[in-house]
Image 1 (cartoon, one colour):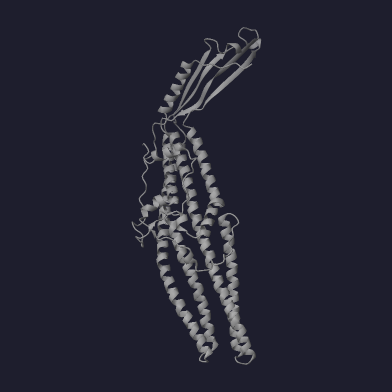
Image 2: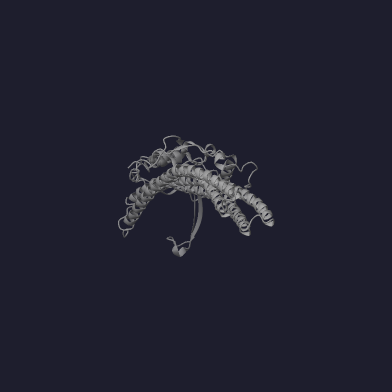
Length: 498
């Protein structure tokens, strides 16, 4: 039969008050150095910038990429891509680690019940007679709870929190990269679709020319050399068409992997128009380099890692000071099970423990050096990330400017080359030039057409890269189940108490 457990309310309240007071006293100090972001190791402005346009971070990817098929692919990739899934699981892993470390700030209170019976033989008894004794205990126990006077546990908790926040920003950075990869993959597919269409049209045109020249050769109107040259043109167009079909298949496979599942990538009827006309991208304003620190998730993640390294320094400093831990118990004890809750059976135990390091062969000093070096590494990584981000934006701005110029030049070149091919064909038809002149003109025309498509695609890719480099396309921040305490602690870490 179970025996109900009753504790005097006054004593339970006193124990709870003592524990609460200890909680308030513990962790009231932090020995972590105050955080100060390193100065930006980049120029104050980009080499090239356009004051027009909106900030990339203020434009959702659904608004920036207006092509319906591309929007569907990006949404499917964000939901099914394995890199995104792994990054999300890393966030959950860091959240669990933070929960474990945060729990170290609080005592572990448990209800314990214990009973024992002991027999001592006569030759070991003080009375010379065998003795049998019993002991029963029921109570609340607090075991080895560290009173965090120097902030060691708090610093470790802060470090775990910053690692959690860094992992969430890393997840968002993976999302930014994924959106850009899917967009570039889709643009590459559309480029190959247009180049394949041009190659097929060229094959059809040259096949018709071969049919006509074959009839003319059969009646003796042209030489065998002219017929061979027409056959060469057709073979070159067929070879290019086969190469482009192969490249398109590989591009489609890569895009399917990015999306994370099967997707219909076949060209849609009526979609073979110039893909730059179908993919309207908004103009972007790069702003100042300092804006990257809040817009780019990878830079925010690097800053959180730096904050985590700062917090670890506080834990290493606190290790030089005494460690105070508390073990306590309160309940009842009796030699008889039935007398556990009789008057006067109350029992308690209070055992504080203090450990002051005196000699450890330099272990604490070496640990301090280790965390300081790791902090310096985190600073270097942060500065490297800032420099890399600055270069990505600068490169994208330069590419956007010069590729736009190349597109204009390419359009002019295409018009001139088309006129050259027309005139060469007219001269040949009138007997004023050999067919070799037509051969060269048509070959150059096909090359210019293909190059212009590639340049237009490169221009669009530069805008995709600029959007990603400025932090555009980042998924939402931490999900709703993120602990509210994490958000609160984040604000407090911006100015840690020395």
